[in-house]
Image 1 (tube, rainbow, N blue to C red):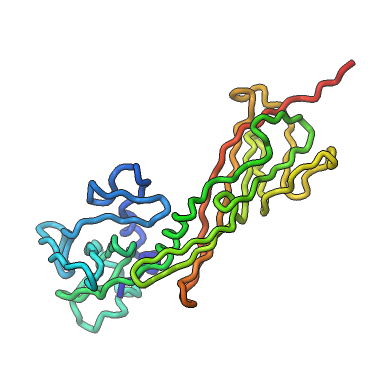
Image 2: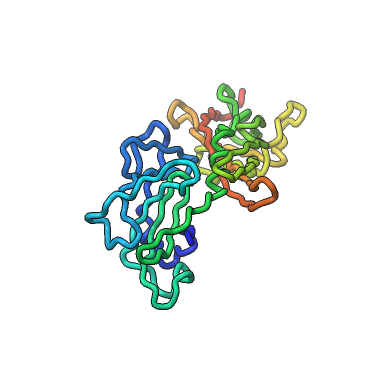
Length: 290
């Protein structure tokens, strides 16, 4: 049985820290294949078939695994014998029969995005690893093209004043705030993902604590006068004249909560994505005329 790496994290976490790194499409190659590219939102692992066969003693002198035809064949996977092996009390051994010889392997399956560990009897081979629905959900998120907040205030051309409440808010769109939905399929698994921003953290660049807003913020109206925002605002204490370009350099970081479900009433789950937008704000002092 293939077990997700997280299941045995307590005993083999150190052994699993050498997983290939996923990179952007235009970044350098990853894994052991120089032609492999990845996506920052996709758990992409790239490896050739020439890894150790189950039952082998190590990486040196290993023969390439036999090539399999496409179709109903099992996904291409690589097997790496863990050194040292996990403690015998680890749950990964539950399929091992008393006295049975074999070893625990780290298994990487690029076709399904599955990475985990499994006990494999000497001379045996594991069943085709299942497709991880969360990997498919992340592929659906890729299709959404989510970006950072579309900032409405502070305005890029605006001029703000020390001691005067500034209202913070964002425009709401499918790719900048949500809700957004997409479906992706891998093999026989189809997953629908729904994403929406659940928190925006505003760093105003003036050394103050970040402002956390659960919603998009309330748009300011002239009739509100000098009132503070009811849900998302900030008060500058010092002018920005000493900052680069005379402006505070800030960021608005949105946390997207993604809820997914396997179509047909199957497995469900949740994870978060983060997107950021930079902004600059000019803050001056109120001039008093004689």
